[in-house]
Image (cartoon, rainbow, N blue to C red; front, side):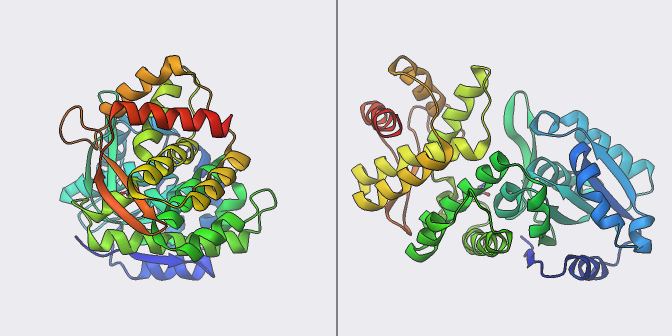
Length: 355
Ligand code: GLY
């Protein structure tokens, strides 16, 4: 798989111009959704560059609901009808929905064209836009169709974070916290010390840069998730169950909130199975409780939650639930499992500590 260049921007205009120059393209396309079209595209247009003025804009509906075959077909048809060739370049300007969908459009149009990711949410900067996973939802299943197709460059520009509301910032921050837990104590500690109520955006961009490095190092070792990339699934087995549970109860929650709450349970399982230290467990749980609040469920919901976990696509054999656990901060144990009894115990722990 080709290597991806991650650029932590100091001067976005220069770095973006440089990234464009490194490609020998015949036509430039810029993909946005209805939000980034209004809030972020002007930043590119104000750069007063001829190639941006001449670029073909493709604008699609926002959010996960539009990450589907119909939107993908629209992007393909725009690329095709507006003169796209094998040597065209696609800029994906948006959150995870845009970098996933645009990345997959780039992977498949004319058997693959070059693309640059310009993530505009914290979640996409530290996760979705980095590491080459692209795809769409299909048949009600998330990311069912896709490929590994890294963008040539990913530009991390902290300026975009100022357009985000607190909930979306927190959602991205949960993935950063995950990167802290799977990397080292000093990064984990600085993440817990960061004041999410009075955000210093320069510091946040600095932390996001470190966070991307954690992901990059792991993806370089295992780009197609055969082994250590599973570390990036920490918090996600139970997190996805919380996400499905909330969605089906008509109270959808942001992905990062589900991951934060999933990490509370999976840290406790890490303590039970792998000896994760109690003090670090409680420090992390307190941070999550203080900043994310809690998800409401009762013991009557345990069976439903357990069934969602059983159907998670990270499980290879049916009925065996796969977890990534931690023996300590940075001590990763992949391919772990837990019994139904233990999972109910984790949910008890969650209810008692987060209540
Ligand atoms: N979001 C997890 C990964 O990229 O592997």
